[in-house]
Length: 411
Image 1 (cartoon, rainbow, N blue to C red):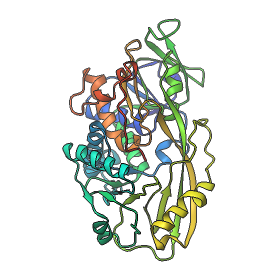
Image 2: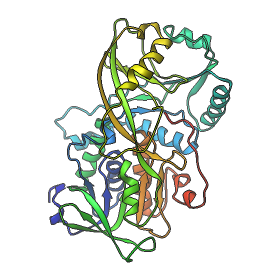
Image 3: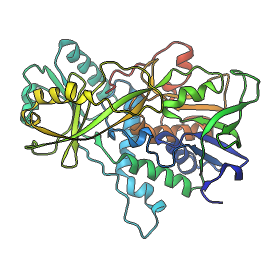
Image 4: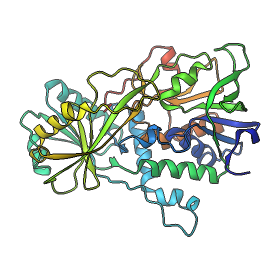
């Protein structure tokens, strides 16, 4: 049977993954390749082009500079995967193809702090990062100026720079490699839209997922279901009678060129305002946290054009003279899968629906953590426990017990 299949030809599988974006692809890869799971696995994806998927619309960054140890560990594993990319994924590309390259640019993230509160928070998170093994360093304004003389730093009190294990990469390259490797190992991709669950009880919670209902009218029986639906994960959880506080939040990205770009390798810079900028080809990619940040419809991909002239450009022009005269380029909008509870991922099952594993809510850092989440969820399903990366701090239980694990470093 082809690895890409019609749902009508597969009456049931051991594991049905709802969502074929970064997390869904990673879970399939983690199951079939890393965990050696021998059962049947199907990935259900509504958008064969991935044109509206978060994995295709984000900035493709990876960093160690988080405030929670589990996120730092997930990033470290993601970097391992990027560095070993040709060896991990080369076989699934065939012997005649060029060795796959994730385009990893390991140029670091540079966070700038301008207020006493920002400085104190930076020092606190730096201590947590160093304790977790991250290669990060605090810099004085003079030290920043020596490395990046194009920056204006009059009000800056402190900066934090990732020396290794941070940068950006080909987002669709990573996604495609994980999905391709999973399919080569026997996972199937179903081009259909999941629209509901059939539960063993009339209404949840308090039952098990028996099947996934599809828009085509088919049903896919399953032993385990995985909610990897990204911004739609809250809706998917609702099919099982669960209230998962995850919703789509819109983010707009902009590209631009400048007449006299600064020389040398540049990091991804995060201004104290939250505006960020990094090199992209011969130009730059930038974005900003919106002033107002409501939940949006999953189909709403209309860019917030005004953010560039009102927020991004003025902030960058104030930070560096070279950004005063620029030429705007492309722009597009994507979605964060925003966890209202604590801005962290939810990985694991609700105790009353034990065969529905959630892997969602990463609030903007899902792509960089996808390899680690896929490995962890694969182990959880195949072996009943985490064996390498301990993702238990992200478990569903913290929501039920009102124990937020707040991630402070969300860009």
